[in-house]
Image 1 (cartoon, rainbow, N blue to C red):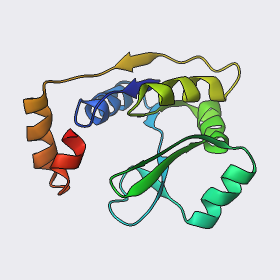
Image 2: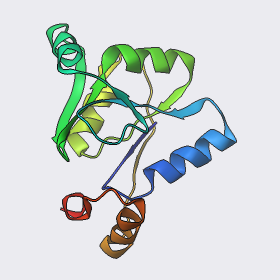
Image 3: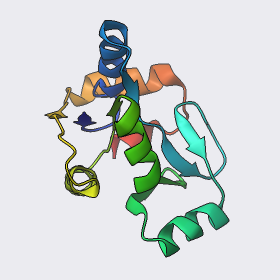
Length: 136
């Protein structure tokens, strides 16, 4: 499943609800290369990312909030074989890249949105310290 949309639009909330209904649904933890919050990510270093690039296994990479976020083919394939990964890309091109990454995989795609004021309240409540960047 691919849930995409702006920050604080409800991706985590829906993923949690899906998992409660059926444990096969689980957040796909993207690779994150940087310091900072680690919850929901698989932390990696530059050497790991370089090896994935060299092997042609980077499906999508985005630099944002001072970090690099990566969807990689080996982990995506593995998670598709054991359950229903719920991927949270933020951009439309990422949706297409993820959907095309594993031949034969079937994806349900949902765009999530909320008013800017609601997103601001949710982002502030998270206390990530980067409200302006996330609303940008």
